[in-house]
Length: 90
Image 1 (cartoon, helix red, strand yellow):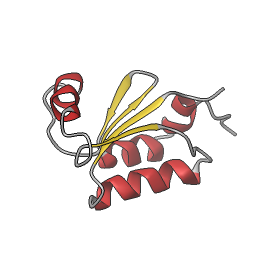
Image 2: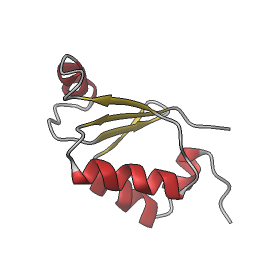
Image 3: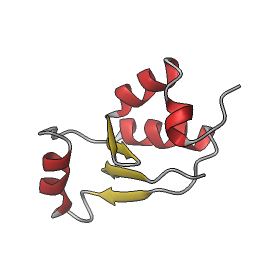
Image 4: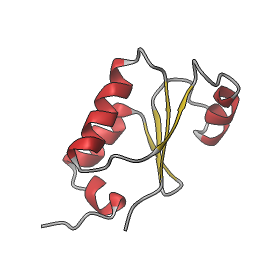
């Protein structure tokens, strides 16, 4: 089972790169990504669906708003990321 992952990013953002690296380390290589430098019209959508957050990345997994990169790392450290990604937990 693969999760539906949506990322709002900017190309130069180091936190965006860290978040994508964490997903790749979990074997996740496919997601929908909106680079707000390339599609600036998605910025207002991101702010709306993230509850007013204006920073990138904003990360959604199966429609659940995870938050930014630090939220993703915190979720991973707490053991909550793998189940959300549909990965088997040892």
